[in-house]
Image 1: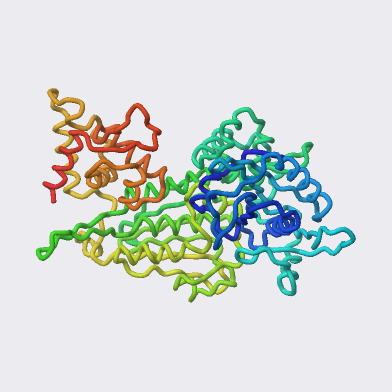
Image 2: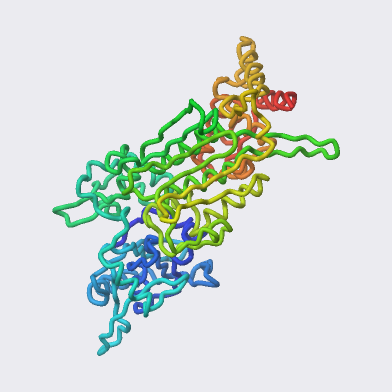
Length: 544
């Protein structure tokens, strides 16, 4: 069946948002080789979420060779019929991938989405030649499809009837527990070609297309992955599915603390928690030098390290355990705690050095959705990115801890040393309070905005919108820039956070404007300061 897949194929092809071991490019149609690769993806040996076979594009050193060779459009229907026959007769249990047709640079491409199977292990005929009936198990090893032998075959057979928790049916739920609104927002965020036709589809049809529901037509159930991402209250199905952010103003042994809980769909609580932490607990320091014109800028904690640690916690935690992801913040450090710990195949010494590689992922579908939303990156890159972000900020090395039984996993991010001296007489760091300079700056803006003779572009429309994030954006926006350029300059990876916390408030406050206001979605869109933004930029300079 030809469908629009719930992913952005252009990103898959050109930006390589899917790991190379999950994509195989083939210049033409070779039924036997394609069969073996589909079998390997269906077995999903490392719980990565299956993979994609792209027909019509040649591979060069693991990358797609563009422009593509393409397929004869008149041959597509025959290929699909042969795929259907192979799925019934040449692979056991029967297995059928989803297919999608794309036009790339004027050439026709056929994409086969081979999701991780629910009845593994799968085996396929070793040869499609007549008279040969030998069957074998196939798995993916790095970027290749290989026949499972010896220990690999025994381990694959040991996976029989074991489907990762996030890919299982939830028989206590119904299709009405899935939200069209949340699904539509997801498809819009990832730029899926499925979005236009989703409005006219039933929840069962849409859910099957996205592989978030399953079962026979007379007994259709949502999968856990669907409820985790597309239900407004997933904690009612999976208790403690939440992120708790706790601030200890007097340290962990003090008498007081402030706590905020984030509950809801995984992608939303993840982004909301990161934005909340950035707004309330991250501070920038500017150090000027007499011997050079450039000032040094650094943060008490780098946002990239925090983002990656939280994403890893959401990705790799167990949703069968009734323990939330907890973020504990003190004047000296931030701790991110999740349950359980890393797989026993991972040595903690390797993890600390950023060299550990997981053999198998706990939540294959959660990782797939987070990567499509650009919240998570490639395989085993989380810890190296945390290490790199801390070093780039001049912070102490992070610490990764787990107990002997791997019951829990703790990421400890120490505050940069210069901020440890920013304490009051009681030794409490005022992380939750605004800088005096920013208070004065906001006061100046508020006073100037009350002048009845000001024009709409001389001062910001809404002084309450001038947050710390808006101030950072105004300081950064020295010349006309695109969203991508601004996001990169601010070192922000999360597009949604940038739009909601930085760009939209600055536009609403009248501090910046679009160069093409009549075409807000144009790829040529740029942003620049308004006259009010220029006034604010000067005030920012004067406060230094």
